[in-house]
Image (cartoon, each protein chain N blue to C red):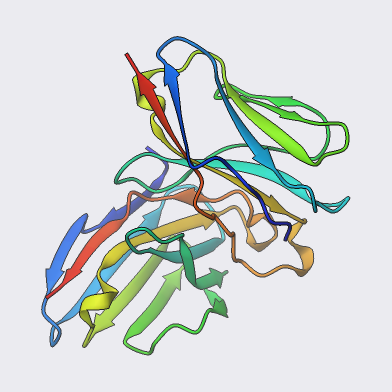
Length: 114
Length: 113
């Protein structure tokens, strides 16, 4: 148990659906991250939030929309996705923005887009 | 961030020490070495990090050569649950960096009975 919980663990959606991924951390951390891991590819950083403010957006398509209502929760809203968006989506947190080398990851949401 | 080179895969017998090497010949003086691992279908897990001195914690030991151009992660008594992809990452302190940790391809460690 890492203290970072992601739901759902698995998600299958059609290209016209709208869904949301949820992440909650119980570590008292101030920074949260979304990473994407496609098959046979390294992890890709998508978004970073520090104290509920977005501090990084790494050229992610607008069909992915993050939301950070407070320092414990992070969402990734999905709409009109493409099959190539199928991947493992990982949430992580760090104590604060200054400690971003020591990340605590959740188990991820395995997303399949049909 | 300095580039790292790791073997693609390694095997280790259960109960024996697993020694995972990492080359980082272009490392700068202020860059740390971080190790993470990723067990199948889970998120990466932080293991250990160091600057130049050897480090040990409850999970592993990190040995960094004197010239800092390479390091070795040691799992002293590998178990089947240590089967995972191990990532070596070199990175300077955060102050001026982005949030992007570059995980690379890592080393797939297979612990065998």
